[in-house]
Amino acid sequence: AISGSGNSENVLRAVRYANEVGCVTIGFAGFEGGKLRELVQHCVVIPSDHMGRIEDMHLILQHMICYYFMEQ
Image 1 (tube, rainbow, N blue to C red):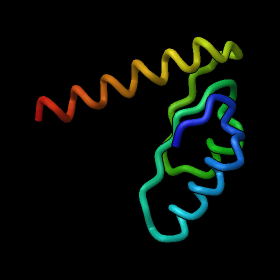
Image 2 (image 1 turned 30 degrees about the vertical axis):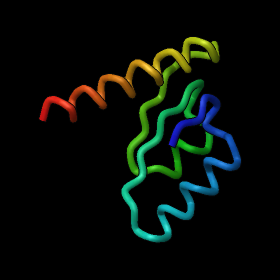
Image 3 (image 1 turned 30 degrees about the horizontal axis):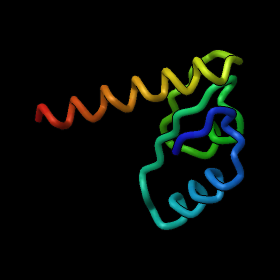
Image 4 (image 1 turned 45 degrees about the horizontal axis):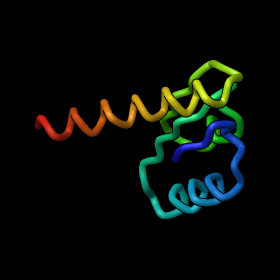
């Protein structure tokens, strides 16, 4: 789940549902992690209050994860 603020209601609803049906939940958030930090099982928080930097870091992390799996 990805939310710059960690408080995007549509993302939070999706995570709640995923938790209910037994999925492993992972979140990317910014600022202090917002509500998302408490809902997911694993959370990467970018400790910044600059949304552009948060989004850039989320994109970099997503690329790193994709490349990791492509190399496996």
